[in-house]
Image 1 (cartoon, one colour):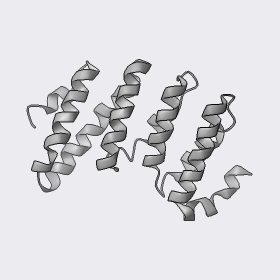
Image 2 (tube, one colour):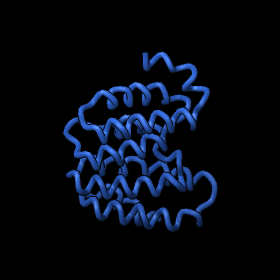
Image 3 (cartoon, one colour):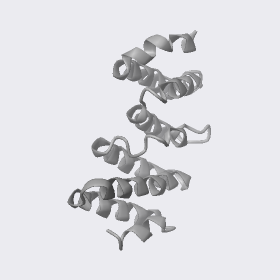
Image 4 (cartoon, rainbow, N blue to C red):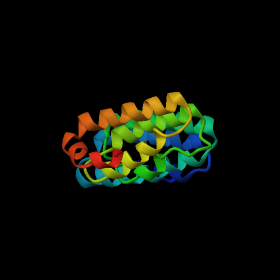
Length: 154
């Protein structure tokens, strides 16, 4: 693992993703705090994939979704980097919303609900529909938050 870690900083996104894959496949062999430290090291390289061209971002986002299934808190502090940009293609926006739903928790729900409210005012109907569905999914996932934050939508 120690020999792989420097490759997380590589310029080539394919090398970064391959390194992440190697680490994820072998991380169960590591015990205790060392495992948490290594998982924390994965956050920055995964986020760096979002500064690549859209096609590569898409591959990165798909991989991030898979990683979040096993390690849901690995990117919990990185919510804002998954916010959609106006210039993002629709397929990226839809993937980012999927990831945002997985990352939502009690501490960042208000921020995400405000962002989704803005998305619901966009002109692309498919994007608007997905944003509204995401609000519904969050209300199911965090019912106590939605009751408190209902004023956001008024």
